[in-house]
Image (cartoon, rainbow, N blue to C red; front, side):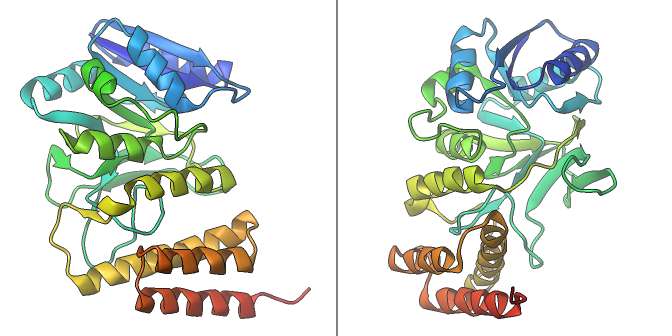
Length: 297
């Protein structure tokens, strides 16, 4: 038995995902959907409300823009939790490393295979072909990660009541997945399963709302970052963080932040101890190259 909790912004999408759930879940279920098309409530407050109202102990939080491809996935989730008593969060995409630089759950690494994913990615904002994103280098059925993507994940009512979503900190729709996993991960394991497949219809996008929430999460967990489940050398960690800061510089510029804002952000990262001098200088050199490569109006 499973309670499925959805924050909804589109009636048709909610209808479609309800049909998909009904046809595939395979065990008794309830859907607790919260209409939020105007964005009046943050996702954390709605997820906490759903957890309190749920009549079943097993909870699944999912976006409405997905299609469930695996038959009897509810039974699979139930069996995984039954057979792994220390499990706290079960997702379909996650990463074994979270850097100190403020980014999403994933990282860019050429040195290690750190992502663990199994889902079909379709695109809403970019004109790209749908593909199956599978990252399972050790051919596992269950892989331990630091955090998972919020598009779909399961936990228990007991865990959410013990480690609620931080609705006092996060009032929008981003960062909640990382923050929740970091909380739960201090007491339980966080895992990705490869036995369930979904099609996610949106790749998401980086905007100022995303950035504000990500900064809040990283400020909260700064003293615990970076987090890693693998032994990563200092040199390789430096390279991973360098790519993360380059990602930040590029995307902050695309979001419309000024060069001055980006410089001040990098400087704050240095003087709060998040990055060192070498990382700071590398990031600013990259920033300078970005500035000088921009065509003059």
